[in-house]
Image (cartoon, rainbow, N blue to C red):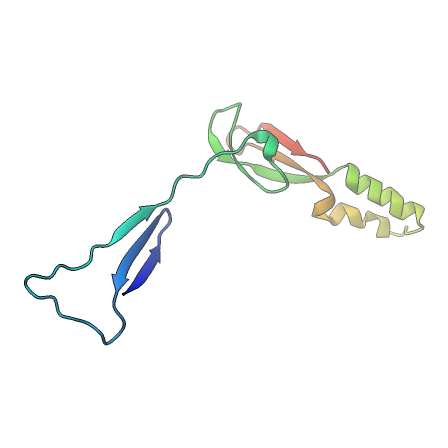
Length: 124
């Protein structure tokens, strides 16, 4: 027997199926296979200190809601140091400003979308 798998938002439905063309009509004493529903556990919030450059699910310490953080990227120390280094190497005329457009060199400011308080700043 093969299994037919359906994915839903928070559940997995597994139904046994038979290959095409191979089917036996149920008789009076035969039972149809039952579908099994397997549910996924709910997502677990992380500690605010473990937030990095991507949004995370946390419990807000200010409003006590479980939220996915809103992330804004702000040029930090890594972007400024790279800018100064490029300027010292002679790359002026705007080329030294490239680090301010690179998200990997910017600090990630996490805030709560409910109460708008800053939860954590991930510094580069």
